[in-house]
Figure: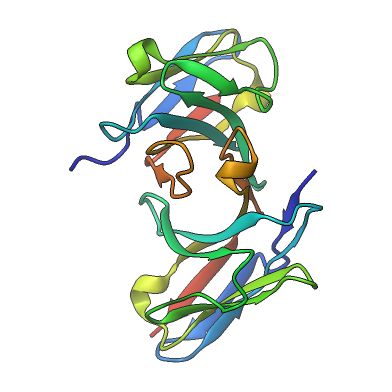
Length: 118
Length: 114
């Protein structure tokens, strides 16, 4: 069974600085997706960034980038130039590739609460 | 385009009562998922519909939980009878067709069983 672990329950960062959120996972599969989701206070969860396991290049979305280490089963999220609006709970999630499975269920980590301070 | 909606946003019921949660996915999305986050723990998968059929219900905790998706549109999740440990936030998500990886989440229903 797959597991996802986020070992940092809470983190804080000063506005405009860079912060890295950690995530490790365990799986015996070779074809999968990894995601970071963001849930701002009292708002819906939204997808921040995704990484396909077969791609060696790390995904980037504007100020958000990942460090994907497949052999180490590590998938960290780096937020550059942090903004107040980045304050949220961040969830790391795993999905078996939909074409390799009959379901696209997400397996989540415990979440990391990030506070961006002015 | 309207996003995923859930009703109610918050429900407080007594142990032994019945509660029905509703999810309206994004129009045209075949896949509908239910997840639950119990206080302080990770979000856990409950089940997955493809249109009106249950594709995977491996995460349903027990037979007190019943999910339906009438006509492949909205879905309901009924808890009967509710127990204290059922308290938590219930999320619904939807995605398009086969092979879709991006799930769009609703705001969640916070269920409190007293």
